[in-house]
Length: 354
Ligand SMILES: Nc1ncnc2c1ncn2[C@@H]1O[C@H](COP(=O)(O)OP(=O)(O)O)[C@@H](O)[C@H]1O
Ligand SMILES: [Mg+2]
Image: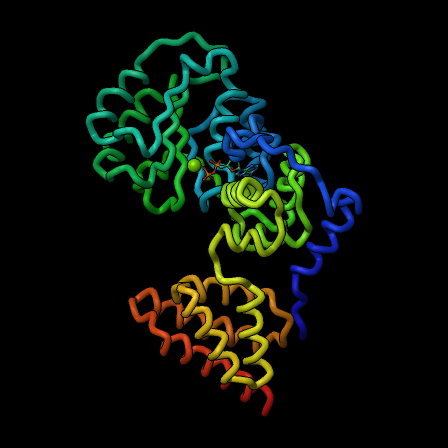
């Protein structure tokens, strides 16, 4: 069975969305939008504007409509809209009372045990008159960086003041939140955004900022962002302000990742039995200064989207995974990567013989 590559679909999709005149020379205003980071400028202010993770967003929308927000933990990878969702939800719930009724603490604030005992408790005790079904909200962003001591101090506060104050925690991994707190909260999971979801957002920003681009440039941004909307927008802005034109080459220059075409060639050579050429490609990447981690991360993504027999792909991914593990253990030599290419070549030989 063949697994179809996704990348081509995206290019043709962008082609459909863009008119020919736009595609090639959109005049970008020289200073347009460079003052504010686009991640902030285009941060959704309403829960309904958040892209992707439909189930999670739908749940939050119900809460925004009905009030009575439970204690919440939002967990998921970076740049998927956790902070944005909490802020939007708090604004929708509290409207004009936001300033008074919301306490926002993120990783850059001190959130040690003293702050939990004093600042958070004081806020929880504060009297604010709110409409029925609304509560004060304490937002603890990046809560997985709180010490477990501080989290322990939180659990009692959470219970005692639950009739007037609710908590919203955002974190990357929910397992870093102590269990007693987890059991007091409803967990909302966020996943990486799909390529289509990121593309939709990028198209909106590109139109609003009059960015000059070719579809392959956006494809490259989506590739480098890997499901992280923040990174996608940052890379788009960096490429736009650095080069004034978003194409593949400029994007990979800005992001400083190994060019996927180069890595793709390596895989192609392996599949065609040209082991020496594949090694030469690898050597070239090493000479350009890319670390084994850079190379193997790109390699993994290339293999995942490569058009090849399913059995071969699965074996390739397995071997790449093992090599990644060894690199993470500290053995990131050229030999290690060559060994990986050799293993991949063997897989191909076996598949061919079978
Ligand atoms: N689901 C999303 N929909 C629209 N924009 C998003 C989404 N996720 C992230 N963004 C963009 O990325 C920026 C950072 O998102 P944020 O919510 O802070 O991510 P995190 O999940 O790391 O807290 C936002 O300002 C917004 O511009
Ligand atoms: Mg965040």
